[in-house]
Image 1 (cartoon, helix red, strand yellow):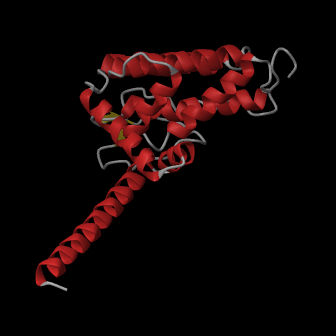
Image 2: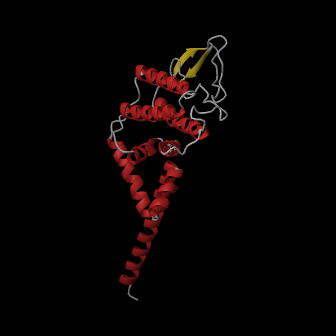
Image 3: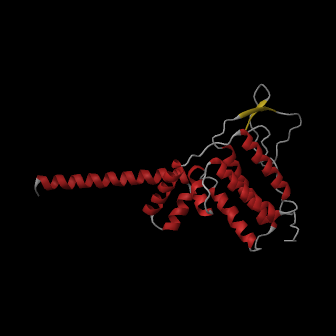
Length: 228
C-alpha cells in the first residue's frame, strides 16, 4: 500500500472520529438542555439526527424572538388575575381551567412569544423552560378532555397545578429579585418553599405581594357543580 493511500486512510479515519465526537457532544448538550423534551422529540421523530435538528431549529427560532422580562406592573396584574382564577375554581372548575389557559397564553404574549397554535407555543416554551413544558402539555391534555366532558374534578385540579408551574416560571424568569419586609403573622403555605430571612427582617421574593403560588388548589374531595 502506497504512503499516499495510507495517508488518505488515516485522514478519513481521523475525520470520522472527529465527527463522532462532535455528534456525541451535540447530543449531550441538547439532552442536558431539553431533558425530557429531548426524549419526547426523539420518540416522535424516531431518528436522533432529525430530533436534534428539530431542537436546534427551535433554539434558533426562540433566539430570534425578543423575549423580555415582565415589567413590575405586569407581574402584579398577572399575579392578581391568577389569584382570582384560583378562587373561581371552587365554584367553576372548568371555567377556571379555561381561564388559566388564557392567562398563560396572555403571559407568553406579553413576554414576547408570538401567537401560535398550541404545539408551536409548547415548542417555543421548551427552549427556555424545558422543565415545565411537560406541565403545559399535561394541562392542555386535561383541558382538551374536559371540552369533551371527560375530565373529573381531580383532573381539573391537576390541570390548575400544571398551569401554575408554567405560569410561575414565566412570571419570574429573568426578573430581578425584590426585597420585602415580612409582615407579622405571615403564613407559609404548604406548597411554598420558605426562603432565607436576612438580618434586616427581609426576604428575597419574586415581587411585592407575590401570590401566584400561595393559594392552595382545592383538594380532590371538593366536588364540581355538575357532580363529577
